[in-house]
Length: 358
Image (cartoon, rainbow, N blue to C red; front, side):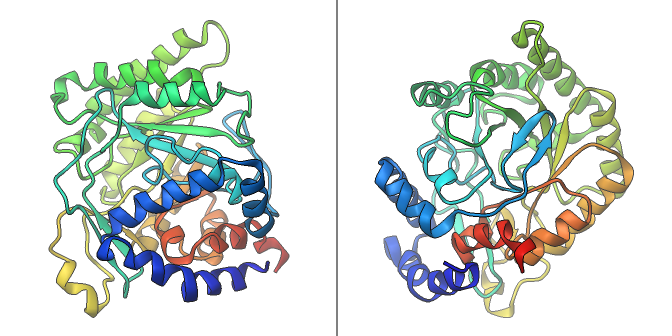
């Protein structure tokens, strides 16, 4: 099916029903959709149906030694615990980033903690790294036969790791190391999440000294875990709210301490670009994602690609194929989507993969 028709069908017929699930509760809709996708993709026939509608096209690329079949991936946050492992390749994604997971299982912040801003094409969330823990994800990946580099799912698997909420900042390094040791055997790359606004103090780990200590420890441990082979690539995910000077400091740490690439960006604490009809939700605490983040994410990607040669995965405000094209034109090597998937459906993935055909 043509990507534009797929998007139109989703917006006209599927999305209204999804947005009514759970009395309109976005988190209930999220979990219900994830369970449904996992069930459908749990059979070869189901995967074939999904693939026949959604998959196709794509521009292969190798990044940090990892071969990606196309340029668009699933951003962290959609499938924290790896329940939909077989669904994402069937939908046309060229990679999936699972997590964010933490060393300790945790329930996340009190509900409600996710809010749709439909007039703005946006979401505010303050989930707080709700997840079953890094070890539980590692066990699920192992049960699915996923090992680093074996392409058991047909696409690379990244894992985003963050700090457990109860762990103080001075214990963050050991906390991240625990998660790294659990998931590294099953991940094609690791993403260090130091940029979520929903864990108190987490963004302080983006400061030069703290980030240097964390990166040095994780890069060294990845080398030890590799046993003389090539270590698992480690990426750092950045906040869009960094000042230019803070961003430059972070780039200096990344380029000088063995980081393989950067992911730009996480959600924002800003509320610029909201439609008037959504202003009543602007006061909700949490990170804003979606269309209002588009301009700032592009600015950050442009800044990074001009400042260094590290590969950049662009994430933030990618709501249409043209948004992905703009990020690639700015020098990003891959893009990731999540909020765009909520508003445009799987036609967005197909549209990005076939945008060279238009």
